Amino acid sequence: IDISNFRSESEGVITIDPGFKNTGSCESSITFLDGEKGILRYRGYSIEELAEKADFLEVAYLLIFGELPTKEQNDKFHNDIKAQAVVDEDVKKIVDAFPKTAHPMGVISSLTSALTAFNPTSVNVNSEADMYRAIVKIMGKFPVLVAWTYRKKLGLPLDYGDDSLGYVENILKMMFRQPNGNYIQNRILVDALDKLLILHADHEQNCSTSTVRIVGSSHAGLFASLSAGISALWGPLHGGANQAVLEMLEAIKEDGGDTKKYMTKAKDKEDPFRLMGFGHRVYKNFDPRAKIIKKAADEVLGNLGIEDPILDIAKGLEKEALEDPYFVDRKLYPNVDFYSGIIYRGMGIPTDMFTVMFALGRLPGWIAQWREMRLNKEPIGRPRQVYTGAKLRSFVPLENR
Ligand code: ACO
Image (cartoon, rainbow, N blue to C red; front, side, top):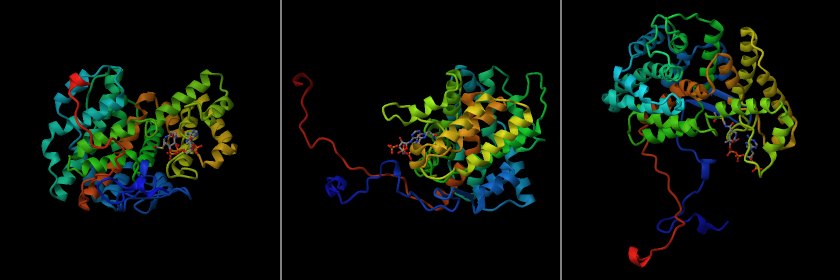
């Protein structure tokens, strides 16, 4: 190794680690992940047990505050959130101003940032009480913004939820209520969404979470930090993969369902096509979330009586990939997003809303990581670089260039 590559002109040795593949940015006690063994735990509890036994709000409390809530803590948390489940009426004007064709991730990121303008005190967090207020505010208002983003797309009236319902039940009602107020609750959908949100709730220092922490480290407010995280999540290499997976599966179906053809494309280094929903920076074994989601996809579609040929194409691709030396050698397994879109589609959620649903699940994780960063009094995030540009040169006036 030529050490001069790692030496900045002005200072000592600097570590270059593009993509931060081997660089830790913080100490964290929130999520444990062992990518070799395929283990994921929130605050010490296995993802399998939480997905089976807990509800999303309990998991949100656990992630943010470190322990499972008692009944009283859970009720208080829920009531404090419900009290915040309204947004300024002027936010409706912003929603109205977006074209119907706007991508929901752009809308939700903008609306989340706009909330700072309507709640300026949420930026000043000088105590745990200030933090708590900002946290319940966004936990209450974000589902309203998600529902409005969806309803705007469908041209439905923007209204509020029903505070007699559970957190996740209310989200579905806010989204799917008819203009005449009609809404029939479906327990299968509530349970499926609850599980999906739990599985997406945190995943340590991924791209969007690192974004939230780094923006928050400048003491920008929680909502601005979350808005930045939502933008990071949007990309197809991260949360946007759930939309990309469904589009890929649709394209394969339209093309006659020839999975082998697409496996060949994915392995061709000259072809930019990648098997979306496969591979992960940290998991070099099965993503434990994908295992749970695959089972849930079978159950949900079965219970709803939906036969979706897309599910068969997905299973076919997975089977081929698990036997293909290209994927086996590179340890490329299905990730959380490979099957989640199939469930969202079964629930009647449009493809370009999938990543918004991911953001809804990731919200408590982002909040927990932001809170931890602030409580640990972490310094401002400011990576270094190795400058490789021109040496000092003299300015040439425009007429002489
Ligand atoms: N299809 C085909 N080949 C792949 C795929 C894929 N999905 N993923 C990785 N590879 C190959 C790469 O071409 C590379 O091959 P090489 O060693 O011959 O050059 C090798 O596997 C390693 O891949 P990298 O891109 O270096 O791995 P990295 O850790 O940087 O990327 C990522 C991880 C972004 C998830 C990648 O696997 C990918 O693009 N997957 C598809 C998109 C996706 O599903 N993203 C969602 C991730 S989960 C989440 O964020 C919620």
